[in-house]
Amino acid sequence: MTPAAAIETREGTIVFTDLSGFTEFTALRGDAAALSLLDLQERLVREQIGDSGRIVKNLGDGLMLWFDEAQDAVRVSIALQERFEEASGEDDEPLWVRIGIHFGSPVLRGDDFIGHDVNVAARIVDLAAPGEVLVSEACTAQIEAPLDGVVFEEIGPTIMKGIPEPVPLYRVMRSWDA
Image (cartoon, rainbow, N blue to C red; front, side):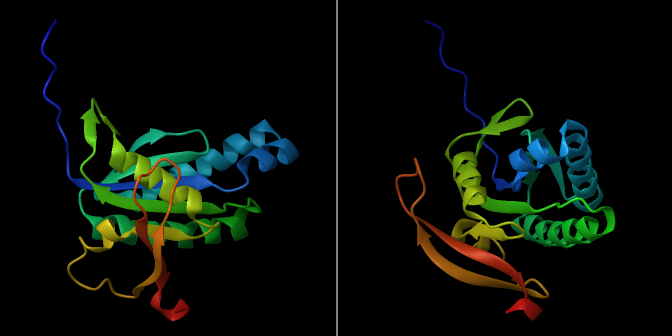
């Protein structure tokens, strides 16, 4: 039996996006419109993410993103929601996106990440409403200085499928929304 390879982890912020209502959109508008919507989401993410993070992978109707810094993940996620809303009005394409953010130390697997922290981030996005950004307390704890124009509204400890302990969550809001 060969010895197991050393596990390499990286500390940082995992972000998931998810197009809300994508299955119904595809059924009603067709595959070509669905592809157009996916391309729009990816283009807007690439424009906003800049050098502060990267797209890890495409997940069908969502994306997995990586940021070294939690504050960058939150800033970009807020900017994305604003851009998604603008694009929905411009193109008559309903770009309703949910975003979930978690800070942790996932395991590196090539250019991908796996493990418990990835699973937590994936569960957080599942709880977000269309147009909403939810973050874990682990993420907010990494943000040392207040983010200009950003408020974290406490939701509280939340039970998630397959996650043994409740995860304290916060809703990210622009300060004029509070």
